[in-house]
Length: 148
Ligand code: DAT
Ligand code: MG
Figure 1 (cartoon, rainbow, N blue to C red):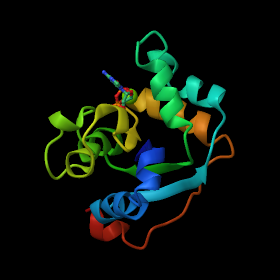
Figure 2 (figure 1 turned 135 degrees about the vertical axis):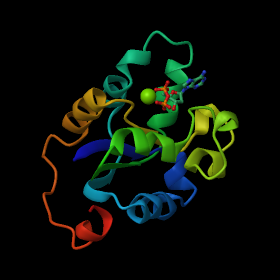
Figure 3 (figure 1 turned 60 degrees about the vertical axis):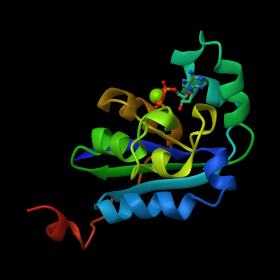
């Protein structure tokens, strides 16, 4: 089973969208294996977005991402990385299909309410970065009704 790192950004938390976003991943059939609400320091967020450090929007992105607490989660399931990205929608909300989280709940790329790993490799690195304490292994009673 694949695991992906999904994060509700400060605007998603402030706008009361934690439950809605968690609900969508639960209802899809993915399993929550790690979750915390916290405010990581600026240097930590810069590490998370290190590959974007040369972009003109980097400073604004980091200011936004440390403007309040975020919800960090790991969701597990078949093709969780790619499917998770589909559920979030395109990076720019104006390109995000209706029915996706970004398509349904936000307007601007700089306030796009959620993050999802973009590959299995980056998911593994992000899970290690955000959950050095490890994740919870548990058996879901739904698994035989979700997978054949
Ligand atoms: P994604 O979050 O879909 O993986 P990304 O990794 O390319 O997209 O960028 C990370 C975040 O940076 C993105 O969610 C919002 C912000 N961002 C990306 N492109 C931007 C732009 N052109 N202007 C402002 N913010 C941008
Ligand atoms: Mg990205």
